[in-house]
Length: 260
Image (cartoon, one colour):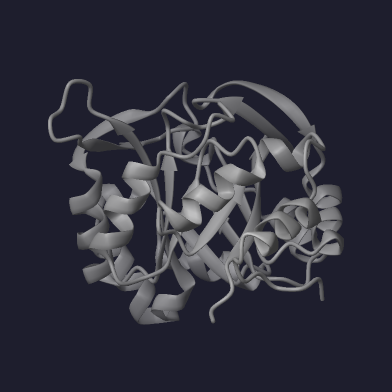
């Protein structure tokens, strides 16, 4: 049985880990290098590092912070934020990332996914998707947003499920699905969004946005059909530990990796 992955997320702004609600009102959560080392020790399966304002600020990702973070972990590290070229991807992999997450640049130029996958392999290319429900849509639809580090982001006009399907065809090897509506609320993931995308694509789907308790992660894996769960607030502020979540999932008969 394939194990489900538990992934802390480091949203980094100005060199510090922050966490907001629906991409706004960020509060400090600590030093990324210290948190990375802590989660590595606590038994996280992977780690995600997002330089959340790199795209909206029109600048490159903070490579030095990535290098120091990568130096503290011995688990897979995914890095995203402001990656626009194949050379950007190469530099992040050289800095210690195992995978890169691309969002805004992929929406603006879908063939960027293909160029990255052809150069480094599909397994290295993660599509980061920030999606928001379209008010009043029936059946429910979600729209993809870009530049989400800038006060909520910009609408792209793209349908989330259709974009997921296209991105996989272009070469994405994994999709992180983040609900803007649920982000930071601790009220649970958008299970309908997760399930819609999980059923539409053949690559692993990672749930993001809304974790408040272990039951939320369980529901994302079962009802949302996700392959992994990403969380930030509950881990950063000590509400639950990695082990708390894994023990809960084990009791629910979900296969998770033992602490290595």
